[in-house]
Length: 548
Ligand code: ATP
Ligand code: MG
Ligand code: MG
Image: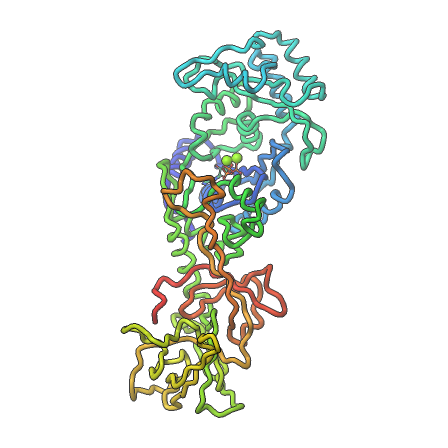
């Protein structure tokens, strides 16, 4: 079911269409190219694109590139890749920087109407005079400059005559407004900075609150959807549309941003993790970026299903990270082949199995989806099992291998532990077992029962593999909440294990997904996998407990 469930914004759109307030719905997704997109952005992407899709409208991808110092083409490219990968196609690809000339001309119009002025106060003075929620602000001493002087100064700002911060263009609204956003907000600032698209053509750049409404209006956006922190900016948004005499009248609507437990949801912090080397890159599988989630193994379908399920509301909430895990398990349950991987190997020699013999056993690829067929896996005298599946002195209720105990090898035979081999330090390095040929899987053997089933990989043909297991990047302990962000980093967010997978997985390609019996879902890492080693990222563990 592709259509999203109802939400309050959808109801507004439906009403607007019905009442003839708009002829078609046009939305936009407006990222600032100052980082990679994260799961929070996915919510906004799904909302904007699905809304337009549902009513046969349009969605633009617009880069809000008005802050050259922090922006970069690397981000522009990754953002496009991520939106496409999520499964959406934009109608137009736009850049706020495309509108720099028009934005400038509309600012000149404001000056001519006496609605904007050039202010010489510095940032600190401006802040002091802005007032507070309870104290009205004070007018700038430059507020009553003549229109001619303002036009001249603004032209000279553009021409590069002044240094950064020396002057600013402000709207002339109301320094006593109870809404601080309306107290003569800044419209343009001076920044002698190279822009990734316009180069050095400009040294003044429009502020978000000015550029955004005009960009929306230029594109004919009908419903401009943003997060709740912009609610108080809405009167300014409307003021800009009106005073700049835009012919189209977009309306702003706000929804609550997505928060997920144990998950960092801010580009600033994500960038700090990359810059400080806490993670490998923006697409490190531990990152909640769309590219990180993709590399971890999340599918676009699972992220879209997640966004649909959490819905769109105005109330603040935090979504449990387990919800995201639920949707990827659901998506892969019937799609991912189920194979065996040994993450921490212990060698087992089956002493009564003929030396040099290798037999092929049939194994189904997905016990819940017959259509996925069967594969053949080798079995011989030497296999690897999981170190955890053996205990020399087990507690009661331990049904895996221990001296004298018998277990079932998945898809193969019962084996019984006869002897434990240790190194000089007393570590168990090998087990000697016997197998019972009568107990072969698929023969319907009912002679006796065993309580434990464990997985294994045949040793001579096993493919070496690396397994990367993850924990949250941040320690989400309320007691630590006031600690510095970088002090809350979880030192154990990555565990790397060297083990083996079945021989048929030699062919595994980047992004192939598997369910490893008892271990969970894994994705082939596209960056680290090489000729000599397959590297798997654990997407999620299985819901069921580890014990067989
Ligand atoms: P961050 O604060 O994480 O750096 P941002 O809001 O500054 O993100 P933008 O590139 O400006 O990032 O955002 C593009 C769009 O994505 C905006 O419309 C914004 O409202 C939306 N968005 C960003 N974060 C979230 C979130 N956590 N939940 C929902 N929408 C979000
Ligand atoms: Mg932003
Ligand atoms: Mg932000």
